Length: 242
Image 1: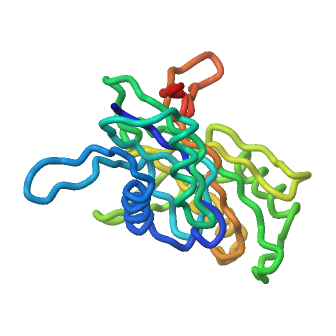
Image 2: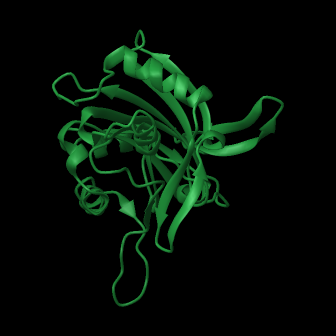
C-alpha cells in the first residue's frame, strides 16, 4: 500500500538538514512499529521518498513523504503512533492511503506556499524594515525588474522571476508577505531569490538571517483555468484509512 504522510518541521528542527531528517524518519518508522516495505538486494532500505527537501533554516507546516507499507492501522492510529516517537518540532499531521497508480510526491511538485516574516531580534542593516519592507517588496513584484542572474552548474543564466510568482499578498497587517511560487525540477523558485533581488534593486546586501521563512503547503498542478493554473495540495491525492 502506498502512503502519503504530511508533517511539520518547526523550532530548532529547522537547523537539521534533509539527510538527517530522512534518517530520523527511518528510525521513527522502526520505533513506531510501522510495517514499512523494504527494497530487495544485499542492502535493503525502507521505501521512502520526500516531496521537496526543505532548505536549512526554513520551517515547514506542510511537508510530505511517501512510503510503502505491507499493513497498517487506521489513519488516526498511525498518526498517534508516529507522533508518540517524534521529537519536539516534528509533528505528523496526516497518514493517507494513495491509489495504487499514484505518482510519487517528488514528481508532482509544482508550487509551494510561503510566509515570510522579518525577525524582530535581528539588526539587518536594511533601510526598510517591517511593514515598509514588505510594502516595498510588493511594489517590486508588481512593477520592478525581476530579471536576475542565476548561478548553475554550467555557469550563469538569466531568469525572469515574474512568471514564477503565482500569488502574493500582504498578511498579518502588512508585517509579513504570503507567496505562492513555482517549484519542482524545472521552474523552481525560492523566496530567498526574490528577497535578494529586491535588496539588490535597492543597492543593499541581502541579509539571509533577517527573515523567518515558513513553507505552508506543497502543491501539484491540476490544470490551467481562465484565471491561470490551478493547484492541488499533495495531501488531497490520498484518503484517510478508517
